Length: 301
Image (tube, rainbow, N blue to C red; front, side):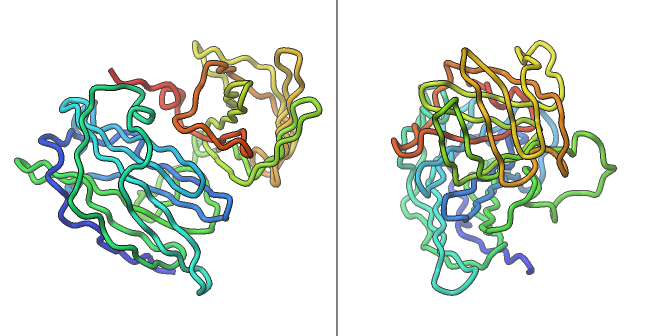
């Protein structure tokens, strides 16, 4: 299917007096219990490649809503919104809505002191087909004309983390960096306790948060100086490890790594982790992924 570019919000609100070069944590994707996947990638127009720091993007989700914040650390301002996609009666079609942010931005930013920038009117709902891409222009630097655009893709097709916008990537040689761990609707066993999940995640690192136990981050390669321990094992579709007297099993619908096999696994225990949005009582878990460890522990000052 060809992707259609749907301009949701072309005003690009002159929200930030500055749009820093580069946008960090560019692509995020969330698979909801309904099977709908929302992937979002932030880009600048024209592309900005100079500079180390940039606008910071933070994502979270609750229920069937993705919460998203784009902030300017230098200007101490942010723009946030909620993103929701629900199935339409027609096969492989979805109604997408963009609404004001419904959670406290401080939870996503992990800091305070930022002021909110808002718009007078949010775009109307739009119906898209599976795999369509929506262009949502969010920010603009009025002095340079540089814009930050969120590319929003709604689909039911599971893809490798970070590749939902592969059509915008350049071809490259295959390396070990292109191998990902995968969580695919796993059943989580904590001794005799059983947790059934309906979501997934994939990346160089994947993690599972369990209420009351903390977050467990997994890597199939060593992570020097990052407090990872080689205490886990991958067995085809299972992740197995013990911690604090509890035996954990994460049992996937599909192999965890590649086409299967038995592999050593490095685990980092993060007992103090608190999710940006606490999952509901009936869903005492969260899953996530990242390409690099620092994205999991970034705090803005």
